[in-house]
Length: 141
Image (spheres, rainbow, N blue to C red):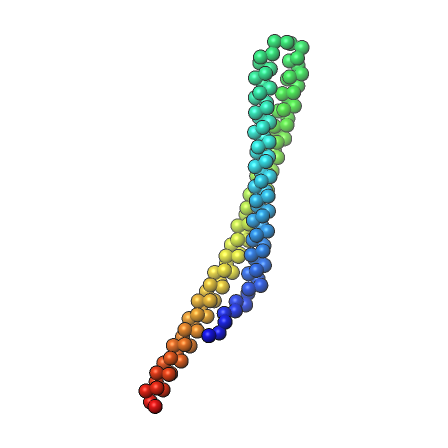
């Protein structure tokens, strides 16, 4: 029996590597998004704590400083929300690139499977033809 050789094996290997690279980029983008979301949550929690502290303040001289700090926290939260939005866009693009690379790899895998099936069908057909010839020749001798 002949050995099956997929002519596009090198292309398939390249697609496998590309898919792995894109998956890793997506994972990094996902991690960056998660860190940005955690930082945003931390800033919001800090703002809530400072706001609660400000409401309990009885010393009027400290209140302007606390309100300035709250205003600064608001600006930081706004910037971090923008960073989360940008990270979400990057993550979505990376996920789309990974899905595209994965589908290209899967196309080649399906093509290889079809070629292998055709190869096996042809090999079995040849084997059956040889067996039929042997049967026909044995009966004549």
